[in-house]
Image (cartoon, rainbow over all chains, first blue to last red; front, top):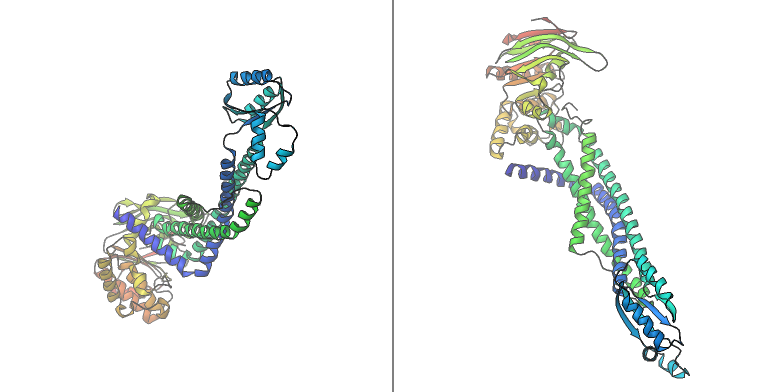
Length: 305
Length: 218
């Protein structure tokens, strides 16, 4: 175990030396990796913020049933009885037309408007909370409620939130696909970097193998190099992400506030940062492993390169 | 100790480098391999560290058939051999000390022991004062001596040299030949492919001649 750690320590040292040996090339490669990572990371953060916003706004989805303005108490009671008998209904709240008018009057700037009304134009209403959030179940219940006698209008109060959630889900999928593509790009970048390294170190590899280096001994520094380059790219991507979010925060908050929406843009938490760096390191290692596997033989795997 | 048993080697394309070579070399022998270019000398030497594998036949070192060694075992075999090639194959971005210590790092030798070994090897080839020099600052003969120090630092029992003096002038070549002679006198088995066997005339080495891949005289 100690020997294994010592060998990895030696390989890590050699990788750091290689990174430091070509600072410009290292910076450029790390930036390419960082840019490849920051796009999906930014997309994920934005989609996540909107998703949290949608969650906060929606609460439980509800259906509002508005009775006809002229509906009598018997009709209201019949509808209430029918709703309570429905197994799919988890909660039911009745809003009498008088209470609705009071609520309207207490609304900002609407008090005077309510006072000018000659008679209450608002209907009695039921707010129904279904047991299931499934859109199909919402549609079924809405259709059923529309046919109840005395019901004038049925409204899915959370339809727009559901649409927003669908959009967020779509964005998440798109971000996932983008992350996959750019992750592949990261693997390719590392693959090519390692290929060039193997070519430039062909003589050293050949001599080492001639003198009794194992294949693992030759491969190990390249694998560490790929992982280190990926990790540095991940770290840089995090920094870029924080910078971009700092630039976006002001205008985004302003835009959201103009719609009365409390939007908060925040970067990934510690676990997210570690996942970003770890994921980048893993992809770097993968690119290096594929490149070493492909090119080392040509560079003198037999020791005579 | 070393045995080539009906060894043939055919390269892709059909070129026959060795044809049915049978040969035995005893421990501590000094063997000079002769032959024109393309006679098969280099191929024969490459079979020992498994840089090539024979198409047929067996290559035995201490009764072990190295031609059938799995890939993973080859590095350990190579560490037990000393290899010197026509071009010194030094790492020119590392100094003399770092070049010579490389086989010991590969063999995972403790740093203190390795340091002592490197110093002893450099002392032996007369380059103790050049351990911090870069190879490019040394003459061709000195570079070849660094390569020899690197080959012997692991204290191999077999030293294989393929045209080690080909690129050197007469004085440097004799210097290298004298070094090989000294190692052989210390008990190291030596197999040297060379065009210039006069370099070893005073040691009366065993001479083996190859022609078109066949053993012709011994």
